[in-house]
Length: 326
Image (tube, rainbow, N blue to C red; front, side):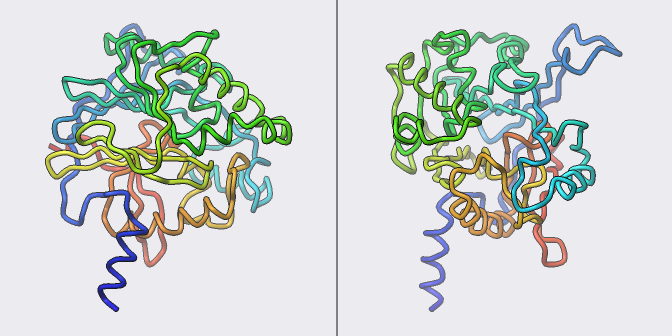
């Protein structure tokens, strides 16, 4: 029985999160772009946060933000969602404040970007090029882009202004998402609010001949691997970064403000398969808590880093004490 339990654990938790006792990375810095004067508006600030994972420098960037209407969270009333958002300090007059975090992985040889943001197709966004410029980088210096799924807020920056904005990058997207978002039948049957994702997905395929449609788990480069977190979309993936006994897993849309381990009765309107998404969270959250995994999440408050912790037998999101860990 014990061996069967161990094998089941391996099958359910193939994410490769750090084992108990493993160290997490140390912070390098939190920086603001030059020219962000005291008293300036928040939209003029370019936030950058860097953390070391072994030989990797991982930089959290932000494309901007959007406020999701309180009615976009089935499972609870809009009033209940607003109350939960106020408790988390993410409530705004028009809805729940969602950030759009992207993550740049560098090891001195390659620069790999995770997702490209909505680039002006949602909310107050389009700041990713500015964030890269604050690092002294241009989009043509990115060697690879890993797309966690093909919702517009993750691919808009790839094709903003009708161009291939990362011309020297290999593009990695799960084959299941490519199939779903380029299916004419699914597009014609889909509600209006997901039509931009279908349109942008078609543009991605047209403009990125170097797109690699991946199948499940895959190593992109030594220490950077794709992990299967399907549910939010058919091919929703995460990215594991590990080196020298340190590890970080970027889980994309496994977590949102309001949708988190203490709120199993609520989900987000954009979930493609509510049951599958909930099942994935039910497997992932307890093991992440057990392992003390350091997690990065696209829509949590910048820089999106935290852990799932057990608090009196209940799971909750805990913002990571990630600063100055070295």
